[in-house]
Length: 307
Image (cartoon, rainbow, N blue to C red; front, side):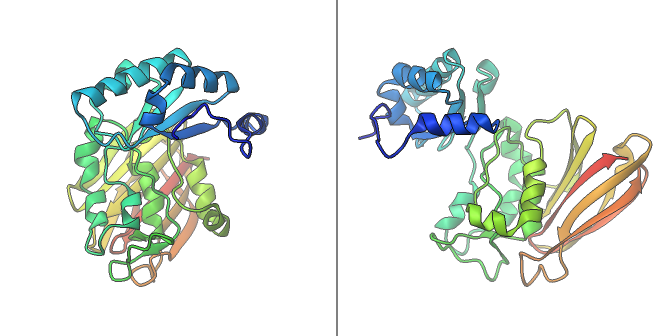
């Protein structure tokens, strides 16, 4: 019935909120925009009083005058009740998040969920090294990356019940650094993350807001390398298209000193088994140049911390 104020006996939201609070975890609810718009004031007031932190609002899927008006009303009303908003099923950002800082993310992108039903001919890998140069200029994006089931170009199939990403495992890790997203998502199932603790631990530690961002290298449609800093820790991510590529990362942007580098890069078999990766930890001075091989559809992600 799309009634967000209807009680469902099997679901005790207050208990979930209390449980999350005891572990310093806030809860955000997902809802279709029509369910919110039918009684927006009461919905936001009620859930704010329960302790909900915000809403992921979905299925707007248009940008006519009436829908744009909804975006503004939703953002303003949510701000009144100290709720954050993530617009999914949304048009690209046009500055609303500057007017209402509680709006922290937008979809407005051909996100990873498309690979659940897209034709096998779709080229998400090339899209991933094109979109950051264009769409990301407009603002943050809710791409929903993080797939642990990865496929080469030849092995990719759109399987709705067991979806997979195009490209390598390290590509998925790198996208958390490359794509600007103050509210990141983990697109895969919990059981897949439990089976992959190294990758999950690395993803979970990546900040979602940054103090400094540097575009290190890249060519639109071919590859991209970005470095981002939070406090005194740097993260570097790189993506390539379907071409295997050797990339040199100049660390001269670092302050003088010696650093510990944790590097996730494509494994030697990643061109055949896209899930293959390697993790290296080593020391590096600020003037070192890192050489990384990216397999077709590949990527790398590094965490750099001063010793």
